[in-house]
Length: 282
Picture 1 (spheres, one colour):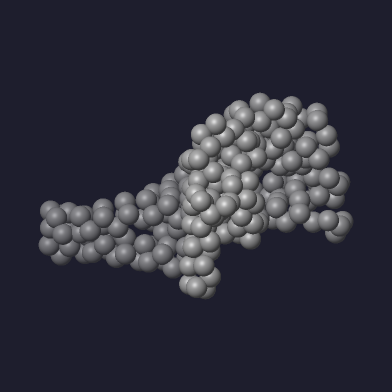
Picture 2 (cartoon, rainbow, N blue to C red):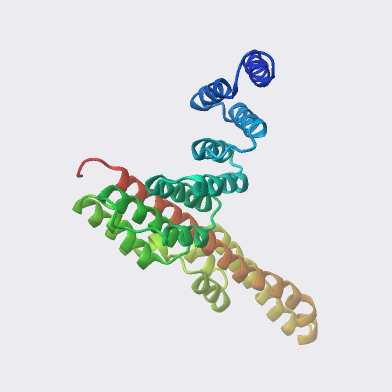
């Protein structure tokens, strides 16, 4: 593997050196070969060399390849920069639409759903049926990420190509455990009124029992000290420990609920993708 990387690097160096008989077109072909073989870092170096030697370079296809390489390397900021360059250099409206989708994918990948929406909502949804489904699929993802589930459902229904897909997507959103449960506020209030119950509600049974036993033990200790010694001893000895575990209990209950709800939403989203990717009715 190291020898292959070394050979590719040497070949790339020779391809871009002046005086070896290769022009920019040949370097472009070499870079494209690297790109199609998934060697994005090496391809990126070659593409940048072409831009360096040809400062008037405005080929939108080349700029788009550079953006794609950055995206493949998970360099979102540079990918967005070159998608913009490619967009403004491109004359074809249909190709510009493809670039907007790629920019939106960058924003979605970085969880910046609001900026993705700004890009997507600038598009017209009446171009073609394929385009219509794709646009609504992207919009559904954005609204889901922004936790606007009614809008997300509406968009995913439009993205579906068959009625059975729409029915299954509706069933996913209709189940409250998929998107709205457990409720962090409910979990917190449950543990405020009855320590440990919020954790149990969130699915953390062991932590809930532990919280219940600890707080209950310190309440029992406080009563014991109040009876056998004095209320002041009970307050000074048991109250600080009780307060620590009591407050920690309802704070953890809320955090557990948030984590579990995020997991449920992630699983629901995976189910939606599976439904939309299915090619045959089930």
